[in-house]
Image 1 (cartoon, rainbow, N blue to C red):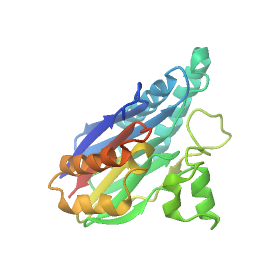
Image 2: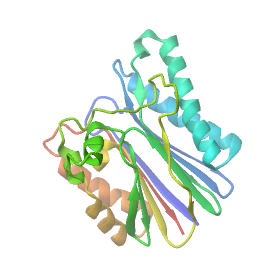
Image 3: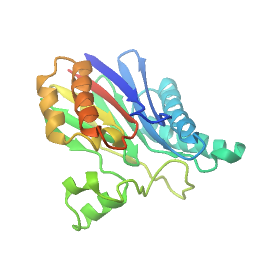
Image 4: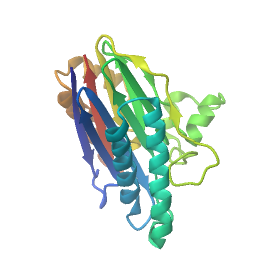
Length: 241
């Protein structure tokens, strides 16, 4: 059984450049979340193109690693075409994180600093690593993991969709078998910067549904964002049991 909930909020800003989506085909599910970048409101266009392209690829080919790769490649192509067609969109870029839940396997991948957190039996098992300057400093041993959230360069991304590449820059994780109680959180940086992993796990243990889990975490995000220049924030919570 798969259950889920999606939220996307402007965080008090004029535009919401995040975009979330899902698609179900029988017992297979696709979840997609993107955080757009770019002036003239074109970040909204980039994130929408990325999510819609990913869902279209899934609708055609179903879940799996090949479809994930095709989703990122297709999103990249759509955004680059959009840049060429519209002068005002020449700087539009976006992150993208994808989750495919099949009947027996689960796959995910990402580019940028929108994250996926993986929980099993209500315990955090893994998360995607940001394609950002602070994450690179953590890998080099120059920064602690917990310092990413408040680092002055946390928004400096090293990989995004919308920049020409010679080889793919997205990252696909090894598939997981469906077993036990598995939970997933896909979220933009406007979400994870304002709630730490301990709180995510604590809310998961208390929640009775993906919706309740998402709403409990969003309440913490809103509280911690008061008095700050909050960003758009989005999240998708998924339970596979």
